[in-house]
Structures are given as C-alpha cells and as structure tokens.
Image (cartoon, rainbow, N blue to C red; front, side):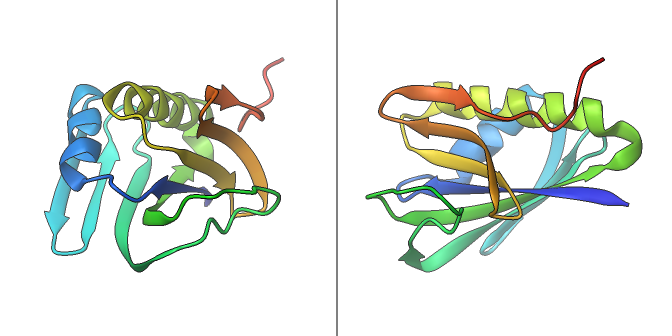
Amino acid sequence: MTITMSVEIEEGISFDAISAVISKLAGGYTIEQEYLTGNFDCSNCYFAFRRVFPHDDVAAEGVEASWKVSVRGAFHAPIRSLSESSKDIQNFLVGLSIETELRFVLSFQYESVYAVRDEQGLRFVNSMVVEP
C-alpha cells in the first residue's frame, strides 16, 4: 500500500535538473523518452516524472497560478516507510528549489497542497506524517 503525492513543475524544467537533484539524494533513476522514473534508496519511495505537452494549468485545487506546468511527477510512498519517504520528498523539493528558480506545487492527489515554491520561496504548508 502506498500514498501518492503529486508534484507539478513550471515550464522550463529539464530532466537533467531533476536527475541532478535525485543524484545528490542517493536515488536511482532511468530516463526513457518522456519519462524519468526511479526510487529513493532510503525509503524505497518510487517516483515517476513525465513531460506535459502541451503545457498545462496547475491542477492542484486551491492554487491560483499564472504559470504553466511542463512536468508532472508522482511519488508513491510505501506506508511502512512513510516518514522516510516524507523526508526524501522534502529533501528533493529543497534540492529542486536550490537547483532552479522555477515554481512548483506538491499536493496529495491534486487535492490538498503540501508544499509551494513561488516568488516568495519554498514553503511546506502541510506534513505527510504526524509526529508524536
């Protein structure tokens, strides 16, 4: 059983930029045409990114964005390693915000927003796990 988190990244992002961040986080990946897939070593969280043609509006509910999405991704976090997956996803988003100034949104199935990168920087507005 997994929890699926969705990320939408602004047009201009490349698979090279995404793979550079993944490489720094001890994750393995493969690039095949329009897809980048792999998993993080620590949590075994599986991820898949795909290019969006034509570029599309942000699908996450409640997000008013003037920018277009060129890459959508999904993180499939195993329930048994949800805390580790959450850390891997957060580290990926922090790394992505360092690698590029492009905007992005992380949501739970495009419904609840968990992180936003916009003109004001990266903000985590929800947590995937409730710490005791």
